Image (cartoon, rainbow, N blue to C red):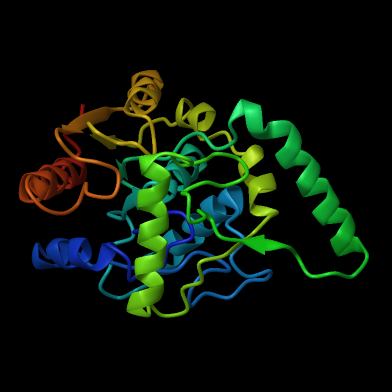
Length: 270
């Protein structure tokens, strides 16, 4: 299971993991490279393509465990982690299926490019002089960020800011409400929608929150429509990006994902 942007494995995922475990699944939760309990420098620099390669290494590792059938490995990703996991299966066809929960698919808004890219180059020049990488909050107190990603400047950005602040207050292990500025360089080069079109033979279920104000539901639907692999869509009515896994409708949603995985393992997905 792959978590959202700059999140750690203790955020949101454990309850879902326990639900899958109750059905007999082994579940591996992990922190992405440079985040939380995982190694990697500079700290808190999510690099999506590197993360996609790392997921392949996770698949390899899990396949060596004595309780795991390496031919029956499934991937589940949320938000940024959903986009990363999709890029994994675009190349790595070993997983039997992928569930993408509210994938985050766009990152740099056009009107923010010039200023943000100039900041990135100044920071790179500074680092070449021996200075530390510049870091900042993914979402400031106004719910905004330099590239306007993730519903920045609106209700979605404020919800994301509140999520990060709550993680700090709850003392999640090794969580930092900071990312490097160079993270935006990685995101500017990230093209998950293009890679999603190249997925072949790996069944995909996409869960789209009807009221998502962090990742556009219309953009998620468009990306789903363009995929050519066997696919299933689940529209979560009345749900938002950060409420998708909790509250009313969460039991039905989990059951739908469990049914999808079961059918995929039986080789019956169309």
